[in-house]
Length: 340
Image: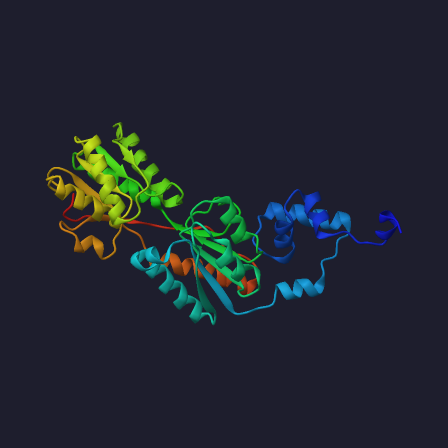
């Protein structure tokens, strides 16, 4: 029997629908099964389905929609970072509490930033959970495809790489850094450096932009920028390098309170007084802000509220089959203490 004859009577396939719609097979599957997909994608896939006369396999679709009453909390970090960073502890606690209130079982899935597939892929692609909340996402196309390719409804904490099509919640990181920088400018500081976070995190990008915005509004050239630090030890080394290369700076806007703590260590080692010689701000307002000396001026971000908003987005989808309004962007607040 020829190949042509053997295909007589064969109906259209999902691959053909995807090809006609100009999307991947996994994206077409998500669009047809109510997963994460933009309205434009859903429309294109539905148009292709109708044109080809494709009828989804009801048994497969029902199986895909089978409820487990479990949700995954995916954090893209190493175990050491998870248990030493108060942000992750607050996020996990608030998410778990909210999911329990909704009758859902949260599963914590730590994603190795360097090898995500072996661990998280098994959970997301084998029907173990009904949905996903992703925190600490570091921009990477393979990781993004892993997270969204499962067809599971997925919410991001922090702006994702495709904010127009992926539901997310965030704090106003740009405005927060703007508030801190403007405060330093109002205190008479004119050579304000920035110890920024990882470029792969949207929060690092936004906080750097807020620092630049405040300088632009004041008509003052920004000081030096040095990015990449996310923990206290790395920040201490970064700050030492900053002081060697730019000894005339009179203030530092730090990516976080942990980064600011590393800067304090470097400033003390260099004999620079805070705030007399160099003023300093952080972001978070965790316990570190009042444990360091001097107490840290910082941008407070409502982390528990942020996590609950992410949980509510996912719960709303699981309960109603439609996304509540997103994104949700929460306000930040400058807390002034002794370091400025």
